[in-house]
Length: 331
Ligand SMILES: C[S@@+](CC[C@H](N)C(=O)[O-])C[C@H]1O[C@@H](n2cnc3c(N)ncnc32)[C@H](O)[C@@H]1O
Image (cartoon, rainbow, N blue to C red; front, top):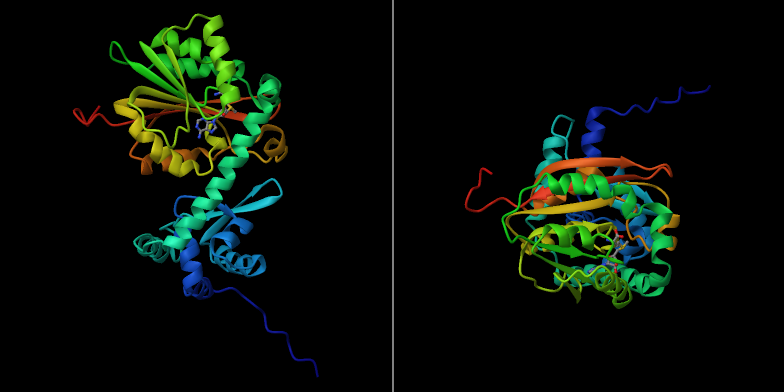
């Protein structure tokens, strides 16, 4: 006699149990801790936790099934980030409390050191790319999005802001310097930081050609070089070359004066993985809400945003974030 096959039905209590089970493991809790401000691929996480790739994949699968991590395809690799707790869903408050407890845990020194190694590997890949591609810079930029496509939107945001007389600007990653003439016209003095000698040379040639006497070029890693803070900090198509963009936004905040403005032009999240090889992109654009969340964590307030759709399918986001004025917190 054939016995009836029991129907497997997922009950709400099963979902709650999956959440508790996923969280009931020290390695998985540490993975959630490491993902607090970053997203990593499986191989990177295996490197950070000095464990095999298949073991790491298993743990990530358990976390993903419990809704504790979300995935994002970056070319051929899958990147993992923490899923946000949703208080209106079953287990939402447990999820939020869990992340709060996890974030209060110290991250072991050896994990921090291996995370720094992973960031170093990403940054090195980016530096090598710009050292090689300076000769073809414009053609490479045009593959996705060049300044002509977002200049008007960026200037619309910039010109809607008010700056004090004698205000200063800092451009991080000016590339061949095509935005420097606009900044030089609007600010008393402009500093441009690029960590690629080859790219800085292109910017220098432009400054000489256009007689930009108030622009100071500096060969420096923007995330490692202390600077006098500026009224306006601009990053055009640079954030996706940073190893750890969330952390980078936190590091860039001290470069802004109180009451100053951070302008970021970036690609919206996309799945064109060829951009990694062809354009040296470490990140395939960003979700709008990720930028806002990272800015908020860095103590910045979101302002206006403009979006530019391109014929090639890419979308650009031009974002303004303000550093609250310590003297007039309401402004
Ligand atoms: C894609 S290019 C963008 C150039 C220019 N802003 C534009 O939109 O045409 C990225 C630039 O950022 C620079 N860069 C990348 N990481 C940097 C860092 N940590 N510090 C300073 N510059 C960096 C690169 O050398 C390169 O010139």
